Length: 270
Ligand SMILES: [Zn+2]
Image (cartoon, rainbow, N blue to C red; front, top):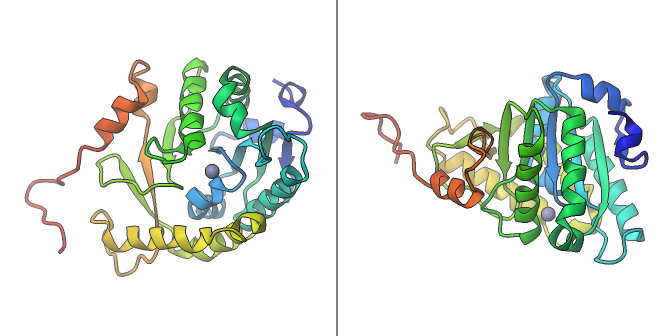
């Protein structure tokens, strides 16, 4: 598939330039599906920076432009795209797809949005894919997750890894939750979120999510030495939805809530 099939002005590489062809030919691409142009760095900014350090390329699909409903080409969309590119640069993301949809399109015209997601995923064939977890409170996030799962189920070959990240929710303790120590990348994550000036002027997103990351580091029983870990991101292993194509997201979420009691004989720290 060529760049023309995806939309010339949708794809943007971040320094140093990566072509779509180079991205698609990389065997260890990590692709993040972000409903809005800041969800990637809020939910997974630490992981993105760590992946870049280990030379794993990260690309993002921004499903909505961030423009208000009915104003696809507004100045808001241009500002949010510029902010997203600056944020990507902070965590060394390699490229992004800026789709022109609004939140209303996502809710009311899924038949327009979902094939585009399927096309991009089929084109770049990511090794790992990240999307909002099913527990998100934001309706657009949950809808994008459903659409992406549908898109993945239509692709001939899916990613090896499928992870749910959190923005508008905290993940419950679960055997399916992976805790990632992002202490070394926390400041880069904070810097990336702060590039979204139009959004952080309204809410302290950096303070809120790093507070949650700090909470995860202190209270997670799955980290070997919590004193050394100051910030942690949580990811929900959602591969089950790819292996069992009949499994609904609601049923998967219910299964994910089953708490892990840990191996017999191992006591959790107080
Ligand atoms: Zn969002």
